[in-house]
Picture 1 (cartoon, helix red, strand yellow):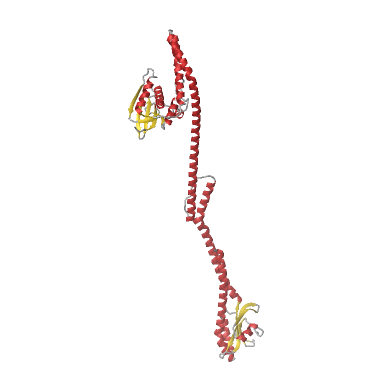
Picture 2 (cartoon, helix red, strand yellow; picture 1 turned 180 degrees about the horizontal axis):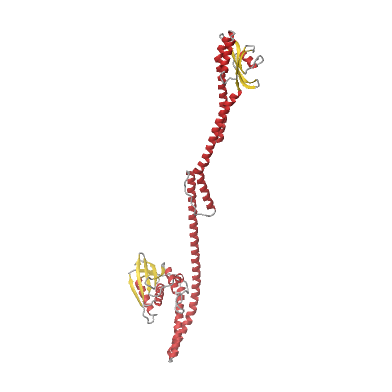
Length: 463
């Protein structure tokens, strides 16, 4: 804009200089015509005083540097100011007399640069009887143009400064500062900061770019979150796969060990039983009973190992939850010693479940056995219905389960009981049985003290 405006001013000044020069020339021509008729009459009557008076009147105008009258031969008749005395060899003077057309040009008169205009003096009959020369300083033209140039270029300089100020400050406030904020935000993104967001303000284009950057960062954040979730899920799946592989290996080993131990333990128990019948000594009987007790303990461990290594559920039956719970309570009663613990089915809604009866009953017995071993005075059993789920709850009034034990309670051979009181397979078997039935097992401490085990199963439809 500044360069274009400067070029326009330069071109305009050239036009203005030409117009100003034409105007100054027109002024001289107007003066010459104004006195040409009086000069013509004075020359015809040879009234030189009148000629001089007319020249003096022209010279009194400050813009005229000199004026003189010549005859047709180029000889000076009268003069005022700086003029030439002889024009007999002047080409312009000869052309003016010959053609009767006003001529002008820049000339040097008495060492001064002047602008000379030659006009023919014509009488009333149209005959050229003389020549009028009017001189004006050449510097008058330059001074007028110089003043005009100064004003024009000063105006252009002011315009340029204002334009630059508007561009610098206006651009910064309108666009620049928003671009700087956007650039800083993009630099932080490049450095790894995905939390930065840009306020979409400023011109509409900048606001759209800022909004687009924000949407892009949101998409990147969502993608990173999804990748992180997938990574966590894959780790969980890999952990679960490792656990399954470990369980499969443990189950295989447990099955082999249980089968190998089952027959010798049966033989040992049978021999001890026969010896016990033949003994009359009380100390020998006590020792044999101790042997049988240890054998029964090992037999229980073998049964647990066999239950742990069994294949998943294949055949299911529709049974009442209350009925199978009562059967488990009845079977557990044969294992109980004389104790003061009360076990009671407090609540039982009429609902049916689809289960492998033997395996699910074994799971219930394991839960009830753990509750009896942990309880101080009583164990409460309840059967409830929650929508399409059946929940069997077994709560004891013991000391509860430690928080660190909740995480590893279902791991094989992990037990919080004293040495010799548990195999560490009870809750592991329960967890596997519930998973095979599409259910779950939850452990929690009761607000009133003790531990609660919740077995959740899908509700079955009665046939």
